[in-house]
Image: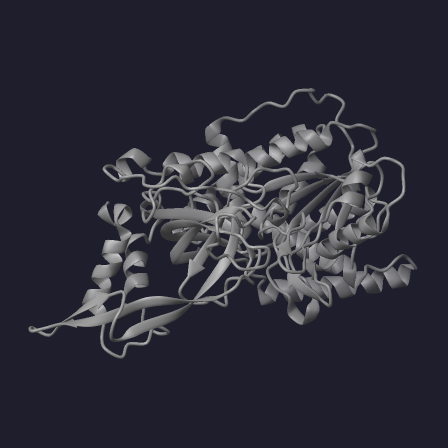
Length: 539
């Protein structure tokens, strides 16, 4: 497509066609955004645009159209005034032409974002995206590569220490207030030259003698916000289509059973634990009424065996079915020496909890040895607890802290109870007959698991008024019966857990509304959780 090879020619033609004297760049981008939205309105069309990453940045030509899926790590870079366009009259025929100087100049404020490759991307997720992309040689046939582009990174601006990644400065001609830190976005834009990073916040061209890495730039035409998992085979914004969801709902119960069996092999045959893991994978924050956080479901699996292989086995399973997973050994050294929360002075430095929505963090407390948590370790543990309890993360600055909402899945493997308060904690009960080696599902089955999780996690679920009244009546009757018998009363916290479990059970079975069967199943799960837990559920 010529627009991929020469996007600036397309943009210039749109300017010439749509420019009117007195047009405001605040409200009118001369049809550029709509033109490109129409050109690339489906996932299949987007795949025709070459992917920008650590390898392709060295071969993609400057000024060609690229696609960069990334996390916004910092929105507070310096703004700059840029020349949007200018006009000059070409007499004697009076035709107005676009030029870079003279007469009427159109200026615009350009915003910059520091963006990094999506933290925790699993290998299948990367491979799927790359495999479907158009062959670069075909897409860029005949283009001169031009100058060699440098591609460097600032390690302190990526959440995971020592993990290789790619970074770029994304520049846009309009400030989008809906784009925030940790948002996952897919940028469609023109590849620009590398900017040298100064010692402060600005990303401006510096003298060659200046210190600091050179970061590639992308001049954004479109910035598509990708929700939650951002499964590469779903729509542009990460949601399933109606037809995809309809088929998934029909097949949900079969996929559910197969997935529970697959997970069970990683938790030594414990199918009850495997079912809770599945529900955990479908959980997300869907509402925050009056300070409450609805939908979160942090999970602690307590193993009675020291040096258990469960953490590694479970990590392998999770990475095979989820787009974004990262395992964090909760050793004393990791807690005491690293940062789990972002902090900044002149620039925002990342922390291990600064990840996109829908990321699963597997915290391995079984790796923790005896010793003392110093002040830094205590702060890190507090940050993890805040995510588990409230799904919030503090960004620490010299004179104040800023609290940002998160939606991160926390799964904790521990030897005994976790140091982190959780919504659900159980002790594993291994099945002695479980084979040591995990069986690997076929690629077709893995694809079914991936689509099932990513789609049902985002599915719209409703609790009908009739079912809500039925649950309320049952709750009151149970409390009366318990009071009369002198036994322990079911509490509002118990009820809240049951309602939360019921939502996840229904979704896992392909039901978008709660029925009696799913409610009874959730209540049974809740009772079993109490029997196998000695931890207090978070309120």
